Image (cartoon, rainbow, N blue to C red; front, side, top):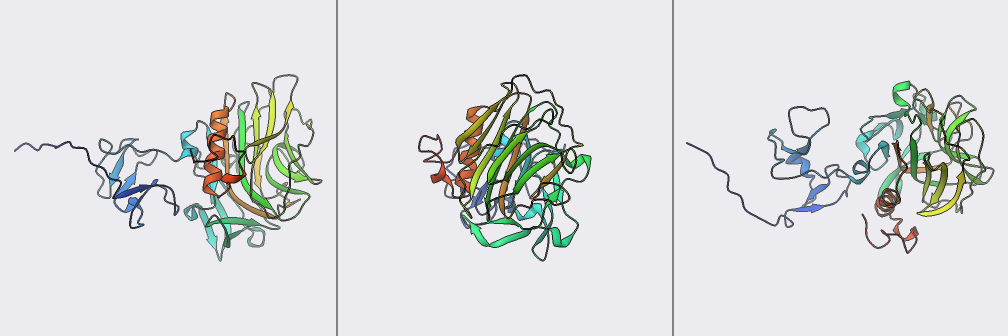
Length: 322
């Protein structure tokens, strides 16, 4: 007896709805609110048993000929090297609402951690942002403490996007990729009442690039390091703040011995971030980030965290998400 498949077209919009709320990692939700992963599970990188584009039934059948898997937007943009998402509780190691480890959702499977309990950030489910939790930092930080957990930038171009807020005005650091406790390679933070977005390639320090600061207000802050065009540019909520141009090409090799610290200037926890981080993305590529990619990421973050009206009215994703 020969089995045959019947092919037909059917609208499944009355069964499935697209979207990531409430934190669905597969990108689809049943209309009754259940995660579609109770029926299907997506391919996991490295699993040679199934197709890379496929959905699987819970019994393991490959449905890639029926459904095509669309990765979440950060992973659809080339070079995603770090994705820390406070809205995804599965990436957090929690003890009494303290975060000892924050796992990366990028293909790098990077993570930052903190063994000392009184130096750990808090999983903040009290003050939600667009209905979503964040990580609250106060005298706390997370860091990559092995070479395997320190992002390798090399001589590539590099971009950093952060959704965060400051509680106070001066000397607060969000992100630092450092070669020692006092020497930075890539840094995003507030110093002397300014945003100090600095990119070191010969340990020479470009000028601080200030942003418009409002206490306790969430913003999208960006540092775009385009090494082929020899420019660093900072953005706030999709609007360029300032650009620093280098006279010569940047050849400094940012290898993975440079430690990543989140929530403080260095591993001695000097100059803590007093505030919250909702999401952090980095992209590392041999070529410069395009305007199209940058605005897609801005649109994704803005609509996810309820900041869409902070985008300029001319932004391509001011009225609808990417």
